[in-house]
Length: 282
Image (cartoon, rainbow, N blue to C red; front, side, top):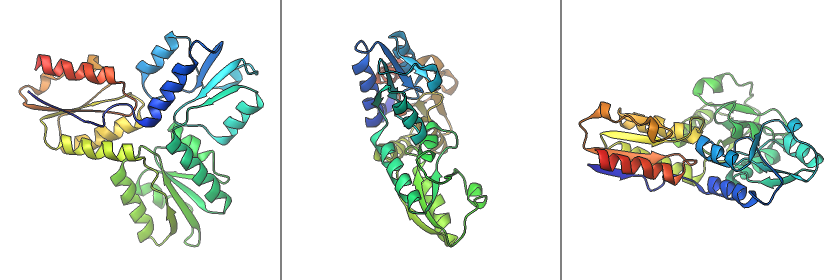
């Protein structure tokens, strides 16, 4: 059995930073909460809950005062929510990914200069919702070519295009190219983080030369879902799992080569469990 494990699998810089910030506060704060799940991995969030860390999605559930410590999730939040937190005099620990913070600054600056904001990403994703909230005007979110046709934009408009950090890199380039062909006046910031681009490239390469491809990630993890889509294009026998319990490799027997990758919020211990299981049992 030949197993190829992606070197880029597992926690990215931003996720590791967010998890570390929560760990630093456990045991030192009387009331510790995260605003939304700190990362998109149920196992990590459940482990923090066992240690007394609450997940809060509504600020009204928190009492004002700095005895309440709130960690802002890695995906970031909108400006209004941040201002509400400050007004409540909460003790705030900002665990927003630095690459997401950069997008907030771009959107805030460009929208203030009168540019129309277009975010390429998943509508409803917390990172995208946070980015929208830093635009001083209404921001547009698109995910497909059809979405572009629905936009109320004029050729005279100056448009600033940014991307969700975990969006499919190839799709991002394709969508930007459509804006160019339509003759829009655009400025483009490719804000897909390098780690995401490297992870997607490596996943595609591995999937193209294996019999079975395993993608490990949280059910709500956007970057993990993108990895699955990319791998599925190269390897029909691609499986998406959250933990070892979800793995059903028997349906693909016989096979000689297995590839494994994982999303940016997948802990190393889960990756190792899957790798060891495949090695021992197949």
